[in-house]
Length: 152
Image 1 (cartoon, helix red, strand yellow):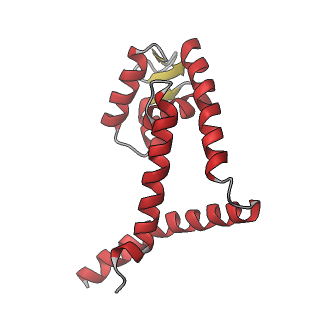
Image 2 (image 1 turned 180 degrees about the vertical axis):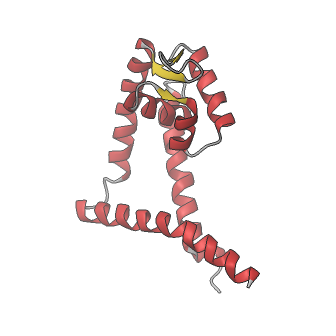
């Protein structure tokens, strides 16, 4: 069996850690974290989204998202308001300040994204995205196969 550093999981982990660190550094000047930027991105795209749906979209627990949204709201970047028909449902929207910050931070993240792929050709970028998508899609099936074989 291959040493851990030679396994696919190790390569993916190193890439994820390096890119997240670069993203954290890029967002530092805006005073937001990558998790907050991800939330702002989805709120910007889905105006009026619920916190529960935002948590699903960001692949975090509702409790984690509630904390993230609370921090964004405290900074005046996000507004929570009751749904006009379903009063128990709380909708999330960017404030004017939140939209302005999101726009500036998103430009910086887009530049980072371009810089990360700058040494790859367009075909290599397409191949990398395809391969990573396939690995992400295979991961849940691989975990299920492993659990089944242990119980058999």
